[in-house]
Amino acid sequence: MSVNYRKSLAQNFLRKSHLAASLLDESSISLADIVYEIGPGTGMLTRELAKRAKKVIAIEKDYELYVKLKKKFEHNDPIILHNSDFLKFKIKESYYKIFANIPFNITSAVVKKIVYATNPPVEAYLILQKEAAEKFIGTPKTTQFSVLAKPWFRLKIIRWFKRTDFSPVPKVDVVMLHIEKRTPSLISLRDIRIYERFIKRGFGAWKKNLKSNYKNIFSHNQWKRLARDLEFPVRAKPSELTFRQWLGLFEFLKRGDSPP
Image (cartoon, rainbow, N blue to C red; front, side, top):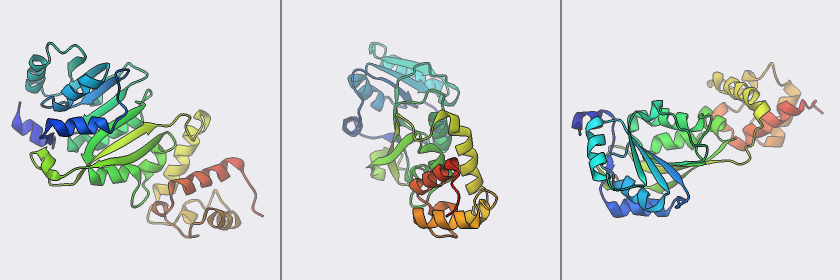
């Protein structure tokens, strides 16, 4: 394995096999599941996944590491290895799950590929830096990404790690993020584009308050009514609204209600 290559990806491997096993204990992965693993590294998670899943499709970009993994798992039938970049890899299954210890420098790209996929996973378990996970979830402040993703996915931190759980020891706090596909979604297919434009407009001028951002959409009286009914300040900024309050704004927009 190219050490410099792994460092450039900011990838930190789990140190103990029993920790890998305990992570899977917190998941819903069963012998009925096809699971994709991103960046299997030394194969510690891969081995545990193969004990619990019907099939493990592990995608490793580093060729040297891929060769070692092929040798290690040559007699392990549930494991299928690909020497490929996950960001360019096409997933064919319509029902699958993801479990991965993500290289930190591609965290955002991986999560965006997952949630914007035409056939997203029913569940994903991702080990990543705490700060990034909080931005995806929208805590402590709501983010544009979280509001755009949450109609289709539930996002929650389900595990906190010690830095010493990894080698090399990371300089940031690490967590496991659970992403679960909603069935049904909170926004209908016909409203997807309208919802996206509406949310992006709200966050488009983040230094301004929402009343100003939506001045051509909601009248003064409508906005006062919304602020009262949804319980947010009249001059609230985009990051100050909860996801449920954002949904309330969008539902009001769709109804086309008139002010009292």
